[in-house]
Image 1 (cartoon, rainbow, N blue to C red):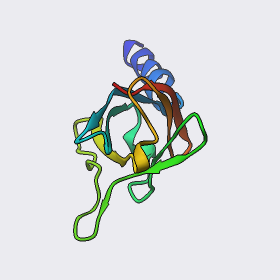
Image 2: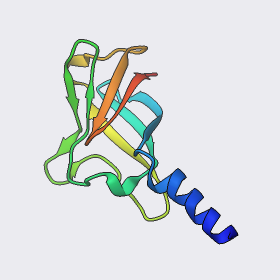
Image 3: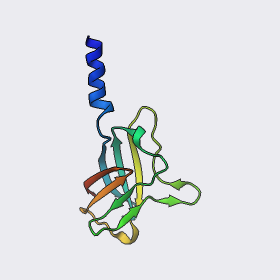
Image 4: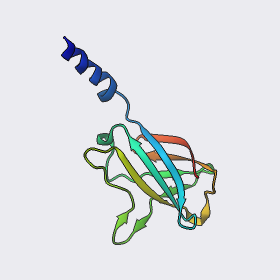
Length: 117
């Protein structure tokens, strides 16, 4: 009986919950040309690794991931036992300043009200 209760608890708390993304830190890198975003995912299996996340500013401008010709986009690959990662966004023309709030969109997940430190 205890085994079935623990399995039911697992299904209700982990498998059936909606995937969530939590931004742990967001700060500037370099001369404020890049925004470094550290995140945590509750369900990394629900994220398409080929999809490109983006930041949306209060003015409605999209900030895309930093992309190098030989390396590709700058984001960490999800490892087996960790649900954390890093993304680097290009702050084109310094559209985001310290203290501004942005939203992060990735697949069908959205995290809003992220303050850039």
